[in-house]
Length: 134
Image 1 (cartoon, one colour):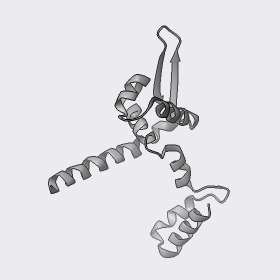
Image 2 (spheres, one colour; image 1 turned 90 degrees about the vertical axis):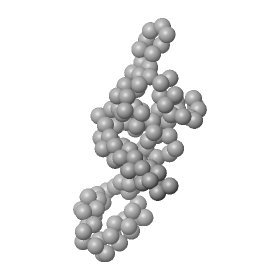
Image 3 (tube, helix red, strand yellow; image 1 turned 60 degrees about the vertical axis):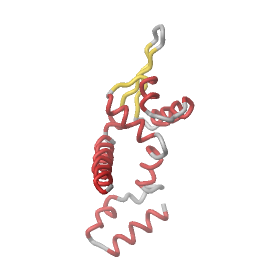
Image 4 (tube, rainbow, N blue to C red; image 1 turned 45 degrees about the vertical axis):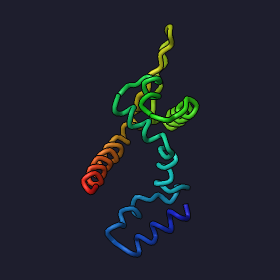
């Protein structure tokens, strides 16, 4: 929290334009909001997993595994468990033979969609610029 508090205090001193961050800060918080978000979605795989679930709306484990190229079974399983624990992803189990499991975004997870869309658009724009420069 000290780093975030220092950063917000510095912004407030340097620019009134960025003071909106100071107004949003709650003194009872024990962590920076950016750090909170980072712990929920950071890492090599989580954003990509969230993107593919969002893009498919509902997706089965095997399909997701194929789409997230290079991820191991154990890592995908662990990342999904964390995303479920953070209430970003919903897991639906169907008790049938063979068993079926589907994943979708929760309402909380859907609030990340604008961020995911912006990341996609940023990637498209910058990939095109780099290709044009070559």
